[in-house]
Length: 493
Image (cartoon, rainbow, N blue to C red):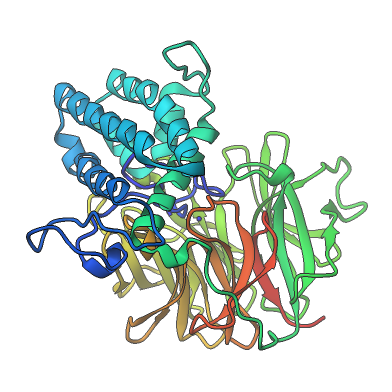
């Protein structure tokens, strides 16, 4: 789910209010004819196209989408840092004008979504102007939703005094923009990806997180659920301390983010919360808390990843500020102190072990103002090597395959049509796309031939279900209806 995108088409995927793994939704001008539904381009090789296929949106709508993409360029970093308040006000006003025209031209349900976003935009823009400075610009670039929360909290109102629901605002901005892009540039995806079920997946168990009430904002609690590889025979794990282990046991509620142990017992690492205290716990498949790996009143750490021996865990300490994020190494044996890994990065995202001594790290940069990329590096910080970079994309490591030769990650890009699950060869850096859409935390099947991941097709928001596919993208199918996040695949019991 990478950082929230730097443009104001925000995102509220699971955990994205805190985790640099959400999914970015900033936009890229559509230049190539094939990316715009196959229609004719305007005069000049660099002119964006206003064409859509017969099954797509009207040409007038697509022309406005191209114009909106051009307007949005003003809000990209580092350009946005250089804007003074009058210049920012002009850019914001131009965007509102384009949004208003889109509302007039767009038909059906999409029109309603655009109206939801547009009705709130003036108040959002006013709050942005009232608080504008370079520090705010950087926070907006790193975590657009966090900036809005920091500036206006839950008290944003329209000109008529009506309160603006920020969750609805983020949903309308994201879903509305994705439907515009799909309708104008990839109408073949309007009905979602084609599913295929001619092959059976390998046997096993799926374990996943189901948030309370279908929450899509992240930060809430829910249940850890176990099902078979077909997504049936579900049962919830009742997370509880071992009787007698604590004189005053607390009721711990899962908050998501889980990873199975490589040991035969298949214990799970699960993030939990009790009141104002957070913890990462090791849990048996019976639901008993075997060990407290980390406890904190400052907030949880995310993206747990077990090493091949089941002795150490990598996790991400997240922050609204990129230069405060770092990878933690947690020693389950207690032989060495747990703490930040000595990595040569000014900021980093989710990570996983390749071997006992080498890891792969996503969304990392040597300098805070550098472009982010996927790197491999020694656990002691030695021999950092850039592995994979996708232009205008945020990446998040899901997991390394059982053989230690490939890493599955998700990318969220300025162009939503580049979003999806990608597998990268750890030796060559060559990438293979598995599926296009909004995705989170892909995990491998025990045989290393399939992936299971949170997913929602473009234009459906970020209410993730659990999907699986083979590495070539074939046999793609939904196995659990949303919300079903952070799935992992266990061998047969």
